[in-house]
Length: 314
Image (tube, rainbow, N blue to C red; front, side):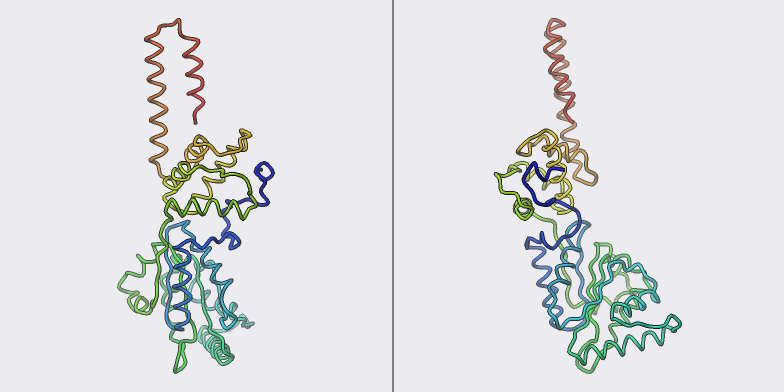
């Protein structure tokens, strides 16, 4: 790998949401501020949505890491669960060690008792669900019923939903109008701007131990930002591949050609750059072919060398 080549102590552009690389970009900070404010109210559902790769799981992990000690957190990273499985999962996250042979009414009662006990000890209980768009319909209703558990002054359970835009589409259905009315705070994670991506790339390289001159030019970062549509996960993929290509050619600075090759090799990036680059390549080849016909076969060796170089463009 290219760690030693660039003087890095760790890979700067991995896909695993690592809070050690949390930079504090505006959309992520704003999302955390909304979450922290909402949790202080102690009521209702809280919802954070965003396109795939915009940093929802990173914000979720940052929230879990930074919760004050008075919060007791139950975390479900995969909520594709039936109502019964959801109740058992919540019970497990609340620290209940229960026999297998319990009916759902008994299970709900024990969860209620556990929530009351935690409340009496001064804890605020928060249930956090990542990938909430995967919740089955019946489980969404079971989740709503959990929030009916309350004392005279406050809810015993707050629910934080992290999900893709499909979550908003599902909750817009008339059958979920009761739950929608309980969503007290929500936030939508937007894509990053190119200058935010520039700061993001430089910060991650710095955290990874890089101390040299800038590896990516401003124009190349704009190219990556546009191809990635401002999505941090795609930025990571393109930056990582660009560094790999640079390392493979023993380069010290990422070139535009490295970035274009990374874009061509990556799924789900903006096709505009792929089409544009392919058209440029075809146009150059056509022009050189016309030039060969014009100068005649005496210039075959010269033009042939040009054609060979152009054919190597990827």
